[in-house]
Length: 120
Length: 246
Image (cartoon, rainbow over all chains, first blue to last red):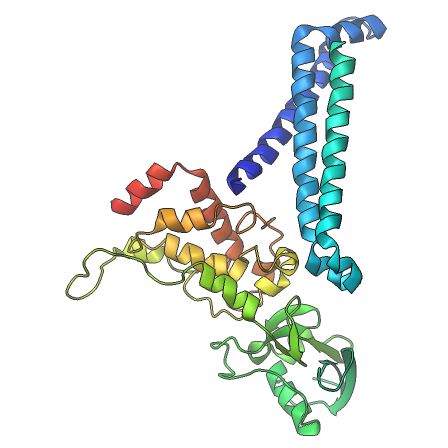
């Protein structure tokens, strides 16, 4: 995969997450009536909010994974674990793969739960 | 300008004798005038012949004596002790992140391997003119701040990304040189050079913390060069090739 693609994904996803935050703040600020359970539910259950929330949740998972992948490939390598102990260094690949696999699973579960809450 | 005694803490490691590296304390008479850190090492070597370090030109041109001086990388030969001395003491360590051969001498194989990777030579397969390949003054100006690098490794060895992935991340010194050839109007392998740097590690492991800029003894800005490479990587390839042909 190209480095520029990963770089762009991380930057543009953070911009869209910021846009989502502004979208929610905009609703709170512009809301004419007092916000209660019903107005809040109506806002989040509207079609555009559901689409936007789903997209942003996907981007949060993607953005986080890129960050965690960067951390994992920096600090969970044969070299860096070797600073701690030689035995850890020998199983560095296994540790790094386990670390990445864990976050992939957590990301997928997070996304499924969020999509379930939003759409079902 | 100084008190009577100077405390020098020196990183010592001889793999043939020492199981682990250690810091050895030296107390020497303070010189009457301000001297360079390299001169201080000469004084130490007079006292202890086993002290090992690299040096050559002693005027900031060869880049041999890069080391960590009181926590900051720099060239010993052009660093006055007055600029680094803290509480009458100086701590000298080898460049961080590279394997230590002995005392302040590090193994720079990984550093040079990255330099080799960027193909640091002009690539132009067109027929050479009778005299030389000409450049306009504006084209030549683009190379200022790039060609002056002396490869002392102070920048790359102050970069955490290079510490963690010295085999994958090219490092600030080699990237500065990569941009030196990307920016050269006479070099025609721009697309190939960019392709070789397009993976997620070679350039994109730079997170712009700017340690390289802070330590460069020649006052260069590798971070700016890395930013320029990233901009070129993001541009349309056809545009880059077209600009090469102009």
